[in-house]
Length: 346
Image 1 (cartoon, rainbow, N blue to C red):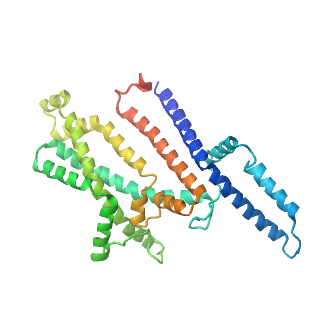
Image 2 (cartoon, one colour; image 1 turned 180 degrees about the vertical axis):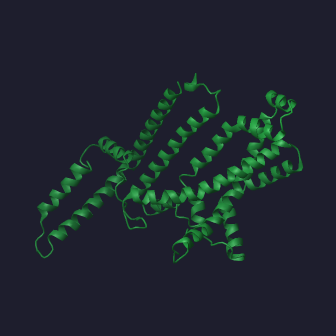
């Protein structure tokens, strides 16, 4: 039964996520312990100073009492290594990431959850927009190439694909910034908004203006390869006997290409597209750095530079969880698109 297959895939995904988070927690355990102790000591010192304001004496008993409360009761810092790792894994799986050591959200919050959930939409807007345009253009051009293999369009676009696909995105990004931002002065060189930030409808226009150049670079690099792969996948499908039979029955070529050919080739095309979207969830460290885009890649780099381990652990956990969830969705979609797949691997 298909629903049994879905439940099995979801359970496996949850187990994989917990195992990976456990590995992350074990790797960062020592540094996280040190970070937590510093945060606890800083918090207790602030509380003691507030209580003792106006008093010349230092209450060492209150300090020890508060430290034991946080060390032992709340954060389990007195427990063995493996026990601390397990507690940290539970906290991470339940999105209890704690507070950052240096980074803050735009609202001034030091809660790791607030910082990450504020950053994820920025990465998704940039890369998902680019990938959706990339998919549309890639499949459209790829279908045209498959329809007339060996034509001038097919050969010329294949050559361009080989040239463009070898270009690093960061290099092309810098070239585009120099040309469109500094030579033609059409697009801003980076950032997500102008300073000062406009309000109302002007804010949306300003955001789209800043979004245009990085999307243009990502699409310019990506859709050529997608068109080439689509062409090869669909071209193999068009050689099948049922396609020949459909043409022999006098069915219009457009219906044969897009109705029969594309539908049969849909599973690998969907797989390719969804995997591209999933890999973009974590952002691109170098690309976001070039365009100064405040996404997940930039957040990861800032966390590494400032040794902000709670943010780093939260970033890895969230992106891992989103990627695994996407793989489950991919399995579900693949099973619905391709009836030849035997559910459960039988």
